[in-house]
Length: 305
Image (cartoon, rainbow, N blue to C red; front, side, top):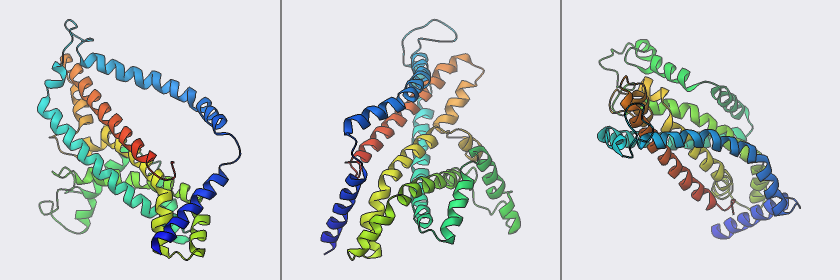
C-alpha cells in the first residue's frame, strides 16, 4: 500500500507539473531563457574568467612582480603543508556549515509554509537575518561567545572554564555563524518553492489517504529537494571562499584557504603574490568540482527530469 500510494502521488505530481507547464513549445522557451541570461553570462565570463585567468597565469610564474617570467609550479609547492592543511580545514568548515544550514533551513521552511503565527515569526526572523553582513554576524558571535564575552559574564562563568567556542580547535564559532546566516537563506528559498506548489499536491495526497508522515516523505521532501541542492551549492562555495568570518573567529593556524591566500597576497614579500594566486586557483578548482557534483545531483532529482 505504501509503494502504491507513493506511485500515485508521484504520478499526480508529474501530471500537474506537465499541465502547469503551459502550451508554449520547449524550443521557444529554451531560446527565450538563453536570450534573457546571455548578458549576465557574458559579463560574468569577462569579469570572473578574466580574474581566474590572470590568477592562473600568475600562479604558473608567467606574470611575476619581480624577476623573469618562467613556467613553473613553484607557487603551488612553496606552501605545500599549509596548502594541504588549508584544503582539509576549508572542506570541513564548508561541509559542516552547509549540512547544518540545509537541515535547519529545511525545517524552518516547513514551519513557514504552515502559515500559522509561528511560521510568520520564523519567516520574519529569516528575512531580517538575510541583510545582516557576515562581518557583523561574526563580530556578534565573538562578543557573545568568546571566553570574555557577554554570555559567560551573564552566567558568571570564568574564562578559564568556558569552552573554546571562539578560536578553538574545532572552529565552532565559524560554523555557528555560517549556519545562523545561511539557514535563513535556505529557509526563504525553500519556502518560496514549497508555497507555490505544496498546497495542491499535499491536498491531493491527503485525499488519496496518505498520512502526514507519508505526505512529508513522498510529496514535500521531493518538491523541496532541488531548492535544497541549489542552496547547498551556493552555501558551500561561499563558505569555502569566505575570508572575514574565519579570520575573526578562527585560530591563527592552520589557516583556511581564503585566509592563507589573503596573508600571502598582503605579504611584504612580492614573490608571495604567485603563491597567493596558486591558493586562489586551488580554491576555484574545488568550487568548480563542487558545482559540477551538485548539478549532477540536481539532474538526478525526479522533478528535474
